[in-house]
Length: 153
Ligand SMILES: [Zn+2]
Image (cartoon, rainbow, N blue to C red; front, side, top):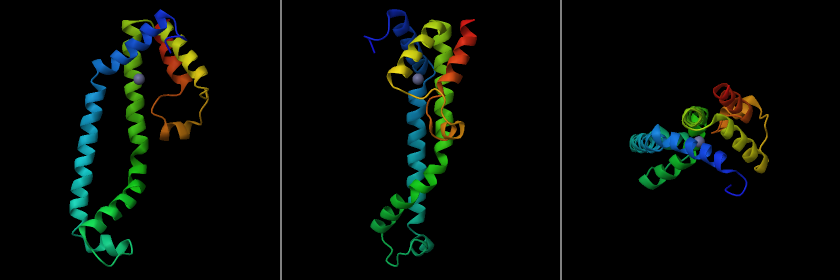
């Protein structure tokens, strides 16, 4: 990245990353993961004592080990439903970091850096909106750049 971007573009990218720091995104994410882990373990602790949890998944021998295995097998199905929420939260953080970069560095330079990075990564500039809303942790390039362009003008 240092070879591809000029000093002004690097400054804007750095300002974006500092925006994540300024808005405490990393600490908030760690706290959220801690909370979700706690809730997941509390749910597991409750499910261990529920006979329907074992019989519903076709198991007749209830045990702590079996509960853990069943929980690890079944939980991704339910966590999948949380994915759009997590992606939306992440995209919101990206917009906040972009806003910070636009006000403390240069939106124009960040746009130029993003275009180079998207080109180098061969990322699509026109992702499917539904797929993007469900999976993408970063906003689509066109939306991100148009918001930054509003700062630049
Ligand atoms: Zn970011």
